[in-house]
Length: 400
Image (cartoon, rainbow, N blue to C red):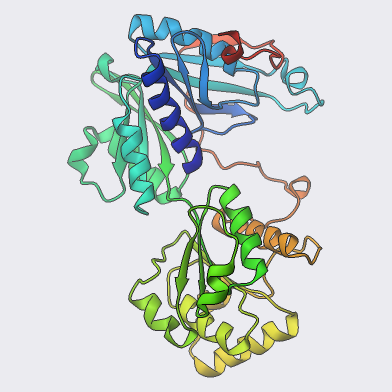
């Protein structure tokens, strides 16, 4: 679940409580997948006790309606329910394009009494702090089943409330992947699902050019944060940028000191696009960016210009590490073709996404391993449903 999806879910819940205060809410969480699935573990959907889908998605559109209708039963009972949708026989019909993939989706549907844990996760991400959302699937304490707890990565073990939570949180934190953990205790089996909560990607675009507008527009549409930096206030102010994009005036000669002083905060989910079109300025910013923990520093320009930049960088820093070379992407972007500002920005942002996800950025048709990284799914006991539905033409929201 992306930060943008989490924000939309919280906003929808707040709006629903205001508009229909007497209608309970339920949260559906995809906690495990056997085989193939359109959405991956960690996807969430908000629905209410009257069968409305309010925000989010847990499939390609075929399961949402049925899950929303079951939300009323869950809210009435006041207890969570684990549901397994078996799509192995009908998935080709559901997707409508002969995909031939098969899967079983395990969904935890639970009453959502308050938003505090989800709000804590969202607020932490806004502050550039990572964490894990933990959902109890099975426990000897029945009152905990279905509950979601947010824990920051740096939280002490005491805050995790159980050894199971601590183990799942530690696994998610180190793998950056959703994880469904289980253990057997004297009181029975315990299962907890954990999903990472990460800050939105932050793109730092250096250079107040029309290309910066393209970077900002496409990145914001993806839900990323953007900062545009230049030392020329007139050009910086003249840019047409989406709401929320930060403008920052920093001279290339001050770039290194500014990064060191965290004038522009940079973390492991921050990427750089150097587009000043000025060789000395790009070189100064390249040195400054590589001094941060950013995993991606891209430089706009030709292959010859990139080679010249690298030579100048090595001359200025003879002990340049292999890690610095690995983080430098010049020329910037995947090999998608096109030379318009929008096309260049698209190629660069796609490369940033690939690097952040530790993927090669090639065509999925060439990939021989599973498309998504998942931990092995433990056997889950819950209601089994053979899904033979097709994508609904009328959604629960439209049946009001």
